[in-house]
Length: 139
Picture 1: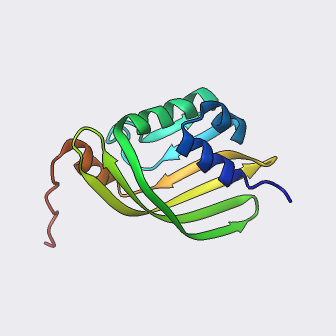
Picture 2: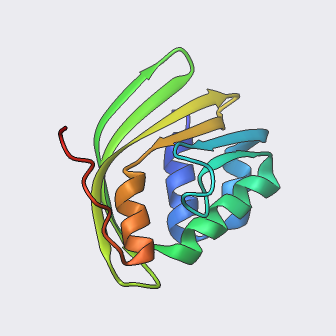
């Protein structure tokens, strides 16, 4: 049976194991965390293994992962979509965020070549800043 590249990816992230994470990705890994660049310390695009490791270092410096539960996995044509429910805690403020998140992966040669995240960036911003955004209103 072929090892699941996502199992290795998530295990490396949970363990904070940079060597295992680097082994799970292609040398030209591309990460794209959706959201306005600069809104969060990790939004934007990251290319290559050193940038990938920097990305996860930044996330870990600001967020503690409390819980991540896969809800749905869709596979096809060298790609996987994972819908997950999770809870995170902002290290500075102690505020928690609960959200459903979509992770998109592109696989190549049994490793992860691309990782794209669609998260509730407004809720993360609020937790990191300890502030609440005003509703835009309906009119």
